[in-house]
Length: 121
Image (cartoon, rainbow, N blue to C red; front, side, top):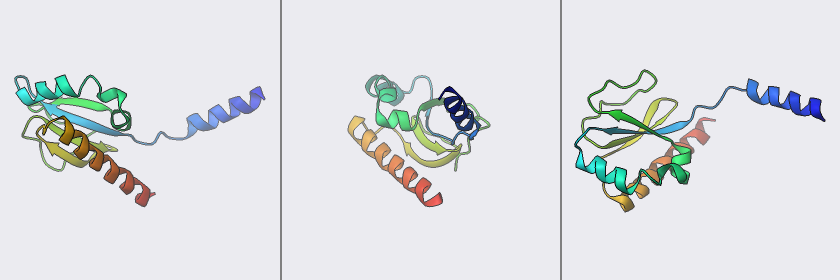
């Protein structure tokens, strides 16, 4: 049994990891809407289903995008929330529309991304 488990572990670790989704928060110091999101959403985000599906990455609006991310257009407003899959932008929310609207919009974006993944294989 121990050999079976060791063999299974080798097979699992040999399979390339599927690229995960992430939610990139583009922010800047002094942004009152960023501060509001940080107060209302940030503490619970990693504990939610959405946060587990698309972990949060932060980026300053004045910084160039990291090499592993490609956006459709450069973000100009803060906060901007960009859902990426395999480093590619899928959808975005510009601004913080408040807690209720944020969760609803993010839910729609995640659903569309997951449906897209299923149709692509």
